[in-house]
Length: 381
Image: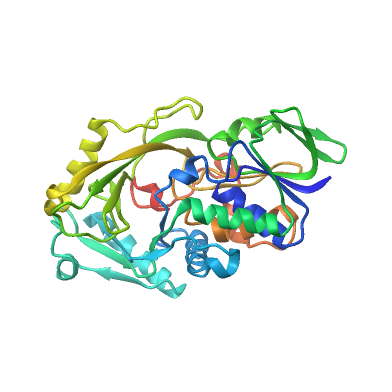
């Protein structure tokens, strides 16, 4: 019998397993395919601590610093590239940007507030129509999502976690001594506790434990482009244009939307992007950076977000001995390496950071949604 069964080996399940195994907990990890084979592997993997929520900001900066030292921690390079990140805001965001930057700097997260003139001195390629203020986070960058997940997962295995790959979980059943996890091949595994970190497949599993979580699944796109004759631009998020942008190595850049998208069936959705979808992204980017008109469409893909009503994580005990870590709504990759430690503490019932308690799914009935993000761009948390 295992102490904890983790369902899902995306970045959140892998991190939870890593931290549990690091504590000497008898852990097993179920995954329907291979680590990072779901939405994690298609993540844009942007790493920034520019959060309006203090607990998430602390998790994000700790995760970034883990990424920088990932090989020493896990034995594998996470592919972290520090680029810095620029966040472009409309006039109505000015007071909040100044407040958030002050708080982040107090937490040791170097964040500069910039006027449009200061942005243009650094990056003259921008057209800053509609932009009144910007923030620059120095330690931000991006990582390799598959490598980061593999590093956490394989280190968990080295520390004693038992992998069950290619084992989709069909049900979880309660018993006298805990829970039984039933896989598609009919195998049954007993565990004292269960941590469900199954991304878009989380809600139906939680239903089996008697918890109906207010999660839905959305299809989100990423467009890929070649620089072509255009000058490279920094990692940035345009809250007026509604997109995020990051380099991908030296030849490409990625673009994706900041806002909500259509709901999707996680077992039946199109992973291909359409010309119309790429065109919408291209139009927004070229409006902000006219020189990128010389860039060239390379391709893209669509993946899934598991989304909560306030676009903030859903973390907590949903039935006796059943815990959930899901609903990160497209901004979970950057949190996961360090967040897994807090989740593991919660599962083990040991002393945990009280900041994590605000993400319990009971909040939606108790006090409503968390205030986070900037306007409609709640993905910025």
